[in-house]
Image (tube, rainbow, N blue to C red):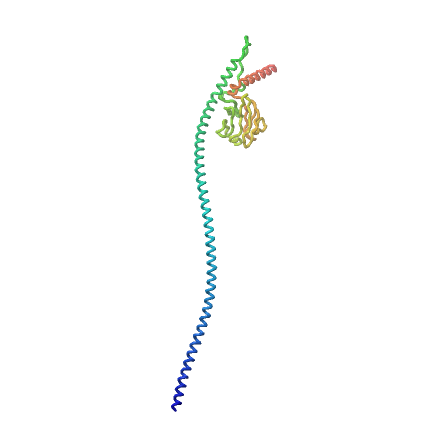
Length: 297
């Protein structure tokens, strides 16, 4: 019985050991399952890490490429900034040169203004002195002509045709309107138009341009007319006048514009004083005309 009890005790110990081993095996199996699951999780995490690492490597490469592009752009910007600095310096130098030239132009303009004032003063003086000089020269010329010993008695020379008491002695010619208005031509070259800056201002008609035509006198007394870019044209005896001058004579009809006013061109006192032969011709023509009229009577 003692052996049986010992065997039973041994069997119980073995049973306990077997249960303990089973428990330990179950625990190890559970631990192995947990480790297997963790291994799978670790493998997934490792794969995720690999993907993240690849993504980070790609982003790092993109950032590095962006940095390289930024460095290249910075170099280009630096070059452009240097070029702009040079251009700015050149602009500053050009601006200073322009200011210097502008100041020089202003100084030249001031000097030209003074010279123009002097020239205008001289022209004004000449306008007053030329008729007197012409009259004196004509008088000297007449006084220097040879005279016959027994000069024939003749009547005094007649006055110029169509005397105009309201015309000044400085007028080389006159434009006479249909209503008796008179516009004097005071110089050897006369710009005529609606502007008050002209030598002869004819206001009132919109057909007349600000600077319409020019009438000038040559050294031999020949008068000529030309258009100076008027809007409506210039007409001499109903013939259109271009920029090329046309010779005119006393008694010609001058029209400013197609529908503009008309005037009769007539010699003035200064013209006869400067060219006395024209006065003699006019007087002779008048005498011949009077003789013909007398014979007809």
